[in-house]
Picture 1 (cartoon, rainbow, N blue to C red):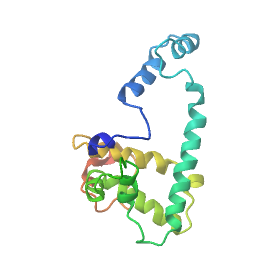
Picture 2: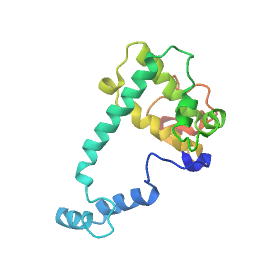
Picture 3: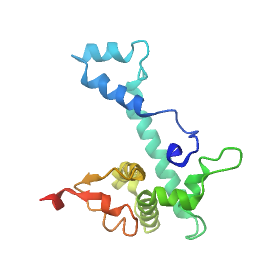
Length: 174
């Protein structure tokens, strides 16, 4: 997100190369012993890959807790795009929330729908943890050349985003 907005990301130093190496770590290993050898090799970014499931669960807990906190705030008392933009603050400056919303409109609308559902009593961490993954995927739509092909129907979650046409239902291709 920071790269799209021209602001550095303070949250993570993970980039595409990290993900490529992780995929190669799995796909190029001849067996499990080779996988273990590769993950611990000099230059590997994944020596602790066995902790990734626990790290992922902790991240889910953190993200859903943040949505719960936002849901407890008075509706209209905050702008979700501004809250996200502030996470990129450097020297007191952060991306313009309107520009942030424009680049990430599907993700923002989906996040706002999730918050509304939480206000209505939903517990997505327990009953729909996939919402976090879906939410993360929608950020990729900032790249106008990307389309998401899905079996899920997001038509009630994303209604107004200019990115909505690039969320393609698999059954629409039949």
